[in-house]
Length: 280
Image 1 (cartoon, rainbow, N blue to C red):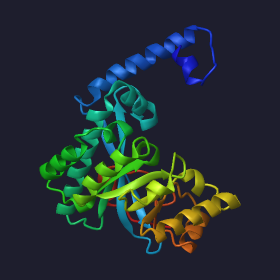
Image 2 (image 1 turned 180 degrees about the vertical axis):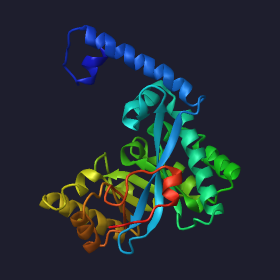
Image 3 (image 1 turned 90 degrees about the vertical axis):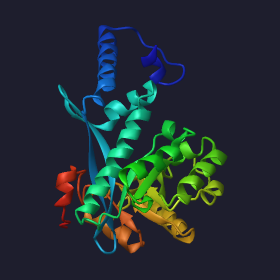
Image 4 (image 1 turned 45 degrees about the vertical axis):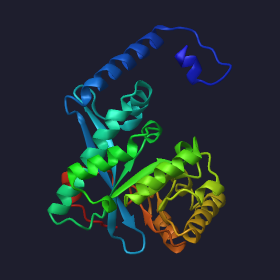
């Protein structure tokens, strides 16, 4: 039934032993995920964000991985959907928030103040929690991290589920001094009416647009238009998924603010990031 529902409306599929095995594997992995937090199996990696004009690292995005005892390092697409459906996304998200803030404080205490912000993705479930601002305030107080060094990312799809409530939450977070970013811009249910009302500071252009800017005229125009719009609204822009020098040159020519992607670096462990030097 679940397999058929995943295929979309008006679908059906026949039961096979493979489906039974897949279901059992998912159930086992979900049960193990319950223990991952307790057993300290989760780990954060950090991907540098680079200022396009200066070439300097100005921030990092925190990305969670699961160091599974049998399967090795698992990427979010393997376990985050399970965490979302089971409700584990809330304690997992809190762990990410606390761990990233603590790491930023460690870096700054060690003199690595050029890492100005750490960006953390908020799931839709987290963003729906009435206690979110209080939780963030509590973690900042606990880790003694200045709010100016924390950036929270919310997808436009999540923000548009309840725009009025989103505005209230975002205003509360913004008034705390936190930087706010609208992630995956252009891929969700966007509304320019609400874009001007959301108290965000940054637009993140999805990698699906950046990937084809050298070969697809429409993708290039979308990127250029989004960046121009952001500038006129007083917003910074981060382009995701930059993988080659041609893409970087295009983004530099259209005055994109910041970028991240494999051209600069893959996500790094906290120790490796301390020694990160950009070499293009």
